[in-house]
Length: 426
Ligand SMILES: Nc1nc2c(ncn2[C@@H]2O[C@H](COP(=O)(O)OP(=O)(O)OP(=O)(O)O)[C@@H](O)[C@H]2O)c(=O)[nH]1
Ligand SMILES: [Mg+2]
Image (cartoon, rainbow, N blue to C red; front, side, top):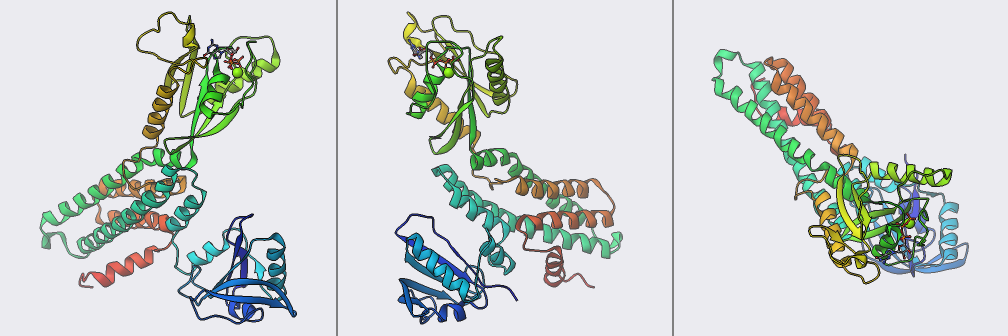
């Protein structure tokens, strides 16, 4: 027996608050506050408790299993006031419901087979998405992953069935092509998965947002550049070298990709302990960045050393101080605005490149990547062995790992499918 739970499913401060109720006693409890409308028919109702009118609400009931959680559910669209929510919550609690834990509706939906883990994660990502590229990742990328997973599972099931047949029939009865075809099928599946794994870093970066760091000598105009890119006066600018000590961040939307841009302390040797800590932090940030904007001021630009293996864009600042701008370098001037639009375009292109999942199934979470990597590794081992029983075992391991991706299909169900869908003479 599970509790009946409720919680607002809309954000604060709107004109309307929607409360969802879910659980076996949903309709009993709600029935004590109002007359229940017909299923799935939104109806205006008075909500009263202890002879007191609490609100007029649009009430919809969804009998299980055809509801979000798979249980009996109801949704009340109330007026958005804080006191309305408090009064309805008190009434629902008073009638025996309890406040839902975070994620509890989705958890019940998963338990009742209404939502697999990939769907639940995609839903959370969609709700959290801040930019257009993130929205597309949560809708299209996740959908591509869900259908790829279904087709991988199908192929794996067929491979398992073939493998069982090879184990059950003596070698001499089967032409060698049967085993060759099986190995080719497993190799093809493994290659497909490796291709998806190759784009996982891009998908993860898009889900989390990119880290761009501005790095350069003191007084180069780093804080000025951050302010210009943000379109806001965020970091202190002064003609004194060593102004910025703390790393100062701002979130940008670069062509639909979320980017966290950080301004850092100017790099130099210094006896000032606080500034030295700032320099240490600047270098630490740069070491973890997806991209470093290395800046050097005109008229004698000297770029800072940068950590290896991280993408770098070199930008000469204060280009207004040049007589002649050197060829082949991107340059900007905060004074006259030159080069800013071009820099923005370059940064947006880099952001797009770093998050390009190439239309592949988007593995946007380490959990998903780990499941698929385990699957591909089990297939590697299945391909490496010549022992039919061992190969069968590795295919089962692969099926287990793949099932963890959706959290829905257990390996027993896969084996059921093997044995019910394929007649192998047992
Ligand atoms: N002529 C000119 N001056 C600039 C430009 N950008 C910044 N400055 C000036 O350069 C000085 C330093 O600018 P900041 O943005 O504080 O430089 P910073 O790199 O953040 O300096 P630190 O935080 O000390 O490392 C200020 O006086 C700015 O007004 C520019 O494009 N042209
Ligand atoms: Mg600064």
